[in-house]
Image (cartoon, rainbow, N blue to C red; front, side, top):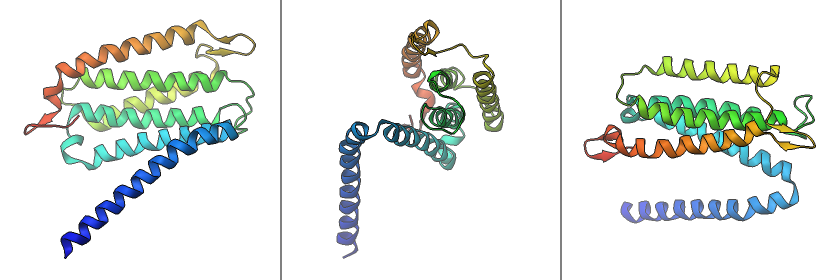
Length: 203
């Protein structure tokens, strides 16, 4: 009896998940065509929420939170979520900050990508070290605060100029970030034994 009940509940959960995915896939492009700002808010907020949830999952999993790679990844996700939220609230038309141009939001988007690739690369390179999570988190939060200050104070290079478009710094940074991501992939492959425990791949 309980077997059939549990099986039925699992099937219902799968249907709800599938329904939610279909609504998201169909509703997101529709929302973009109706109101781009609302679409942007929805997508960026969900991205930040997913990043925070990923960090939460790592900290709640005893097998993950004690491994150096995942300590760095957890701190990275928190930093990326914070920066993505700043990208969201500084986006043109939001009205949260007195900005009416796309440069600051573009700068925050770039900072978020730099933090993400920095976290993946450093986490891979330091995966065999015995890192303390509070120290790692404090370091990433310090970098995040410094980057936010640099953007608002004007020290961060311009990424978008009204009437001109994307700057050379933004374009070069995109290629650099892509290159760092490509560099990280073989490093992750070479270090995959570090992400395993009792024969199960954790990554």
